[in-house]
Picture 1 (tube, rainbow, N blue to C red):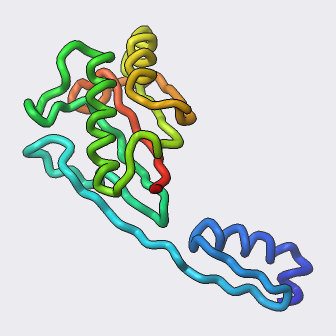
Picture 2: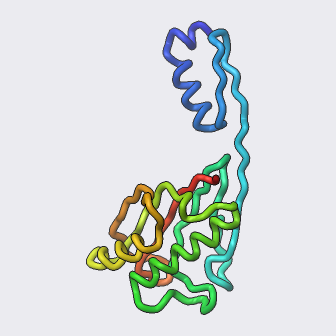
Picture 3: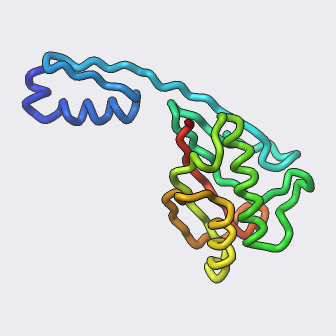
Amino acid sequence: MNSLIKSGGLAALVAASMTLSGCVLVDGESVHITDMSTVEHFTGVAKAGMDLPFSKAVLVGNTIYLSGELGIDPATNELAEGGTGPQTTQIFKNIERTLGEFDADLTDVVKCSVFLGDMSKYGEMNAAYAAALPNPKPARSTFGANGLGLDAALEIECIAIKP
């Protein structure tokens, strides 16, 4: 263990352990690693009739990782009509429904990634995004994307912290 400490390996071990296990206790003499993380998968349905090879959301500890969401209206099983703005609104309705499976809501979202099929529609997305999410807004990245699933105008994925 002393050679590990002298080589700086302890810091790397502690950092890796914190990332992977969720809890690390260090008492100077030895390192104790406790795995306190739980993983829960929510498979949900993205679109009726489609068997997709991923979970709609995964809860790890108190962090909820949401898969990319399209603006599919569950009432019609089709993309929301009207393009980027209405699809953005529908996406957040869908995300809110998924977060509800974990007793969370849109106020718990801390990060969103937006994949926009046409960057000239940024203003439409931004207006609907601003209307859908409560203040303070989460961190966000927006990327231009080509060839989104089901010919969607955009796709949004989020990370939330369970209350």
